Amino acid sequence: MQVAGYALPDFEVRAGRALRRLRQSRGWSHEEGANRMRARGYRFDQTMIAEIEFGQHPLRIRELADFAVLLV
Figure 1 (cartoon, helix red, strand yellow):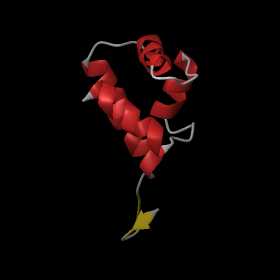
Figure 2: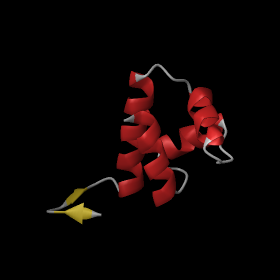
Figure 3: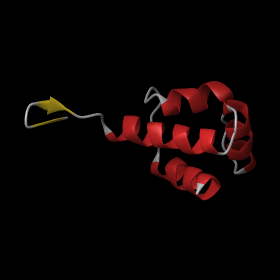
Figure 4: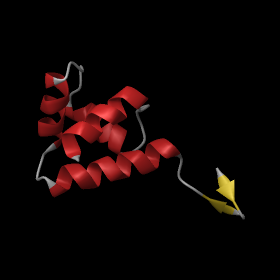
């Protein structure tokens, strides 16, 4: 997306960066984040957490909502 000639990161990239900051502020590893999401019924592993944080894996609205419950 571009605004006034500047490229802006898309939603998934911005959301992933925010999730990374929140995860790190709690001292959680990728594995800890994956464990907590698995406890909520997701099939996440540490690689998927990293891919979400770098905007390389599509982030579903429900996943974002459950991340918010865990991290906020």
